[in-house]
Image (cartoon, rainbow, N blue to C red; front, side):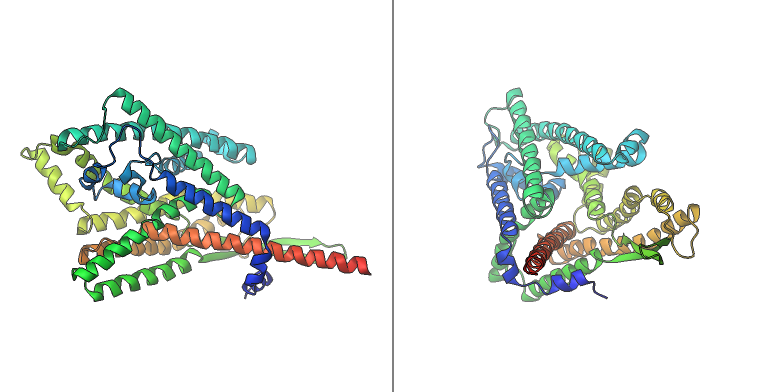
Amino acid sequence: MASRADNIASNMSLANFTKATELKNRIWFTIGALIVFRFLSFVPLPGVNPLILSDLYDQTRGGILDLFNTFSGGSLERMSLIALGVMPYITASIVVQLAAALHPSLAALKKEGTVGRQKLNQYTRYGTVFLCAIQGWFLASGLESFGAQSGLQAVVDPGIMFRVGAVISLVGGTMFLLWLGEQITSRGIGNGVSLIIMAGIVAQFPTFVSNLGQGYSEGSIPTGIIVGLIAMVVVLILVICFMERAQRRLLIQYPKRATQRGVMQADRSHLPLKLNTAGVIPPIFASSLLLLPLTITQFAGNSVDTDSAAGGVLQSTLQYLQHGQPLYMTLYGLGIIFFCFFYTAIVFNPEETADNLKKNGGFIPGIRPGKRTEEYLDYVLTRITVIGAIYLTLVCVLPEYMIAQTGVPLFLGGTSLLIVVNVTVDTISQIQSHLLAHQYGDLIKKAKLKGRLR
């Protein structure tokens, strides 16, 4: 049954939107910040020749660079100042979350409230700078080695000064994106970092449409394949919208309490458990681990001796790990399932939740507080995680299978589609919340005016 807030949100009109001045300012600020992000993606690194970067990048297609290039909106392909995007921050935040769940001192910081969260955020930024410096150094070294092996000089003046300048530029670009994301979160609409990632993914949509139209006009892509791809994307979007909002709501009951009129009343609430607690982390981890060996070998170039036994085994293994191969899709699906259970166990702690319910006097009807509640929460969470893992595996593996069968590079892979849909749904929910708050504000003002007239 829909709540009163849901009914009010469903009856909102564009007239309320035009009156919400603060909401319009937030939306314009968000759009302006995303435009700045797109402008920065076309500013190349100092000392890099942008004319031959595309030829060098074509040699590494199919590796982990494709994944990072998608999230950065093509910045990595152009070697811009923000070539690393916000992926170092995402990696650092995941590492800090895992450490906070495993290390006692960091776990104590997590329980200290706002001060503890600020300390963990500080550690995350330190980790981001460290990862940016490491990745920037290897990226600059890779550019120099690419130019030496292929006969193309991507770097104008190779050497230690270029590497140091590239590292400083890349670290500054990533930290500026983090600052821009924080500004969007505080002054705009939605989560800033997530919106930056989504903007980078959506920015490649026109290129995909033009390539698809060109293939159709040349006859290389049949009409049936285009219709099938469109139908698959629409179905996946509907499934993602449904599954990401799906919850298992556990009834929580509190003891009877005396009210002001002396009536004993029992409070009830619900503990929502998301069907997909892990979010988009499992596909990112699984694809990164699978594509990492391929990328390292592509960076190595001709240094691997394919005539030797070890080189032959490595080359055969990499052939089986290519996109669309059965071994790759099998390992990809198994990796998603593993990281679903692993990350869910890190994010949600049944023991801590059971202790909090016991301290507040809450209990699940028919389940004893304490150890029995912890076991019941773990039992329910395991069952819904199985469904969530199957859903994530199908959403991420199905596009890979379509790419392998049709040969059409689908720009919206499973991970990209998950990010775009989740961020869009979250942003729309925040817009509705602002409209709802604006409508309640108008009702309060009207009520005060009526009270004065009396």
